[in-house]
Image (cartoon, rainbow, N blue to C red):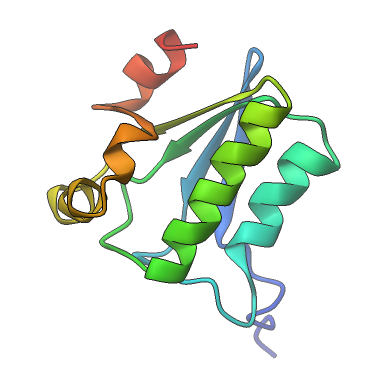
Length: 119
């Protein structure tokens, strides 16, 4: 019997010193019946993480609802004196960020190493 989709993790979380690195497993990031955003908020609200580096190297599509959740995550971290950094954002998603002007809100760096150094 295969594992339930609800049990399959959509993100991989790694602690590198005091930075929580989140890598998305799937190419399409949606906030649907198994919300990715709940996992991200859990890192901040329940686990007290204050430095999040989101690695989008696998991501080819980012839904508009997830864009809203990302803004909410950024605000939540700011309120807790935390920092959100994004890395490895593909050109199509970066273009959406620019079009919607959220590129002005987020710190976006080219790769994970740059992201780790940005804190």
